[in-house]
Length: 208
Image (cartoon, rainbow, N blue to C red; front, side, top):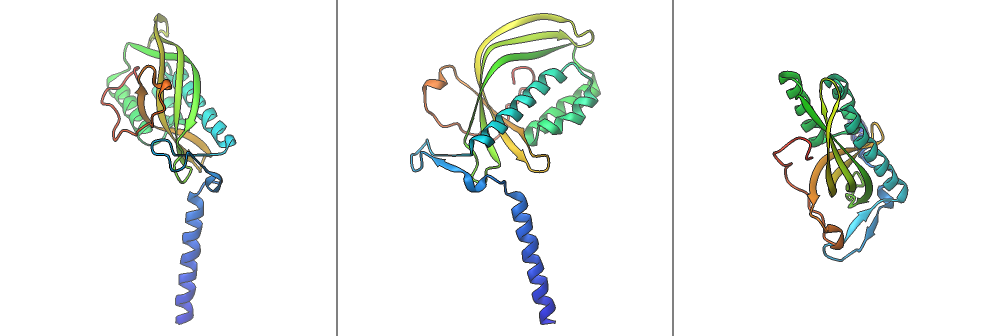
């Protein structure tokens, strides 16, 4: 009886160890503490290879969001979990469900821009980080949703948006998990820490 109990405990320990290791990312032990001990500046950074993977997957998600706007809602629904996660995915699916129920709006906007992407502020476990997307030459093209005809284009100037990314170990991809905020003009001249909002803004649409 005692041997069986010890064997059960041993098996439970192994299972817990396997679960814990499954949640870890390979680069967790290689995270670097930058500006350690400096208030408002200290942050975790991952190896450059990981940073490049975040940048690549973020830009792939942005490209998909742009290219899929004029498509049918079902392909968008099926593809969304490949690029999006968490609150951002739920928000996107909520919009698609509204389209399915009430019909797609007559006009849709597609924001195109040149992107300079900076990856910062990894979490201690290395599974999340922030992306600072400095967008220049931003153009909002408005299309007729039925004919896909471009109606007009607006120049929106430059802007800087911040998103939270999360790593999906199942698909080995970084996904957009949350929209954080749009930084004010001239933010780049200040070395201020970015703070995570407790909730997404209420408004939805082309502005975000």
